[in-house]
Structure formats: C-alpha cells, structure tokens
Length: 367
Ligand code: 2NL
Image (cartoon, rainbow, N blue to C red; front, top):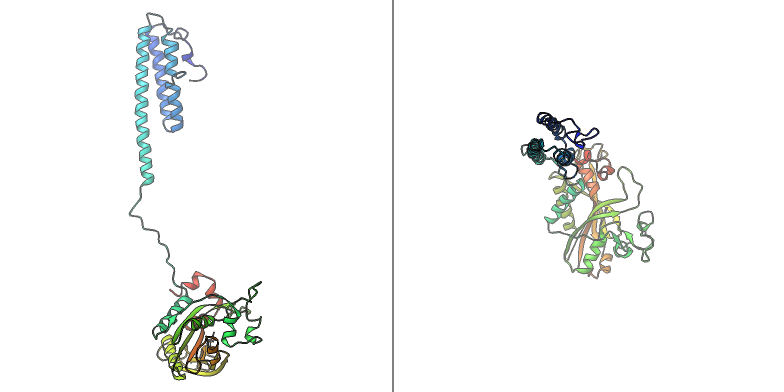
C-alpha cells in the first residue's frame, strides 16, 4: 500500500461510520488484495515481497488494519469491524496458502521437465580412430618376422657415437658421421646424438645376450636432410639381425624372399644387387618386381620392372669384435628398411608429408 494509504487513517477519518460503510471499505481492501495476488503470483521474488507487505508483523496491511481501524473503532462499531478483520484475515490466509501450493507444484513440474531424459533419442555418435598407415604397415612387418622366429626389441632414440657408429664399423671421419647427416645434442660432453638407424639396439642386444640372436628393432630414426616429397628429418625404420653358428648366404636369401612374398604377395620376385654398408659384407640392395605392373615396366618403376625395397647383407665380422662374439664360430645377416617408404610404395602414397599432417581426409582412406 503506497501513497494515499487508507490503512494509515482511522475508519472515522475515512467516513465509515456505520456497518454498511465499514463492510464497503473492507470489500475494497479485499478486492485490492485479490488483484495484487493475481499480478504477483508469476514471479517468486515479487510474491515474497507481496506476502510480507500484507502479513508482515509490524507494518503489514493486516497489522495496520488491526492497529488503525479496529483499536480506534467506536464501541458500537467494534464487533462489526472485528468480524470484518477476521473475515479479511482468513480470506488472505486461504488465498496465500492456495497460491503457495500452486507455485510449489509448478516449480516441481518445471524441474521434472528439465531433468527428464528422452531415452528414445539417438545417442551421440563419436568417430572411433583408426591405426595410422605407418602403424598398420609396421604391424604387418612385425607379423611376418614374428612368424619366422624373430622377436621385437626397442630402445632409446638418443644414443652415443659408440653405439650409433663405432661398434657398427663406421670409424671417425667416415662420411656417414658427417654433421650434414646427424643431429647432435647441444652441450653433451660425450657427443650424444639422435640415432640415424636402430642398429645401436642390436649392438646392445648382442652385448647382453649370447648367440643365437634373432631380433627386429623398429623405431624412429633421424637424419639431417632437406625435406621434400619423399624426405623428412625423421623416418621409421625396422632393422633385423640373425646370428648363429651356421647361418649362410642361403639363409639370408631365403629369409628375404619369404619376406618379400609375404609383404607383396606370392607373385612377387626378388633380386639382389651388390651394394655397400660398413656393417655388412657382402652387402646388397633388395629389389622386388614392381607391384604396379608386375615387372613389365611402368612409370612407377621407371620402366625397369623392379622396385628397390631395402638394404641388407651378411654381418661384417668386424662388428662381432665390438660385442665379444667369436667371428670364427658365428655368422649372420642383417637388414634395414624404411617403414614409411614401404608404406608409401605399397599403398601408392606419393607425398611423404601426408603421413605426418594428421589430415583426416588422408587418414580415413586407410581404415
Ligand atoms: C638401409 C640399410 C641396413 C643393417 C642395416 C646392421 C645392423 C647390425 C649389423 C649389421 Cl648390428 N647390419 N644393419 C644392415 C644392412 C642394411 O640398413 O637402407 N636402411 C634404411
């Protein structure tokens, strides 16, 4: 009640001097109350203020009416006013209670609607990743070598010059040690470097374990290179090593041919070309008949019918000296292949960077 507040005055001052006039004043107050109850019932905060404004103990409208209208009423009118006050009070109480129940129910309903889960809606469809093409290729290579008795060994990417070069019969001042090819770790007193092949792990294995040895070593290797469509400064390699008392060039050739047929299919033929590596003697490049034309000649094999797959050879006896193996009694073969190169060849990928850009449009072609 604001402004011209009738409850601040007495009934006499309002001109209500008989029962009829009193009833009219109370009817007006009750209509006022009903109107306000209607407007404020839609907003919880407004409703709270409204309730206090009418029922507040000190300055609520009902208290004001009791104080200013009932107490000051002349004796003959008092019973009438008393009755009207009681009627108004019970009306107010009944309306407030009714509205309170209504509002509680609709709040409960709203909360229930908010929390309701529609079980008939379709679920969220999250794409499941696939194995990267390099890993798929690696797993195929691993399967082939596990099937003929090799086991898998892995090791560190940061190495010492001894394991990466010395023990592999690559002496100081050998061109393969050139700064152009190798990343050295800045500030390392012993000249730590990023391995340029996974051979160091084969040396470590032979140091720890007597012959026979049959292992493959997969992993990342690093070489300083100018990046282009087929070169980066990191690639994935898998090297293999077999050492025993009576391993011959025949074992070497048979293993290589078995591998090529498993990897490229039963029709693939193998060819060995003389090559050179400091750690094998003799050394060979292993070629296979072109997987695109089958050997008749095409653009992919530059019309030669052959594709170069990897390098290999019989372990150079000089290497055995570094790991305390008896070079008179033992012999073996070794090979090293670039997994990325093999993947590009087998799956017809022409740009190496595609393998490392994580572009879903490329990756999803190899599910
Ligand atoms: C290539 C050629 C090769 C080896 C790696 C090797 C390891 C030891 C002893 C002898 Cl411990 N050889 N590894 C042998 C021949 C070739 O790699 O082109 N790799 C990408």
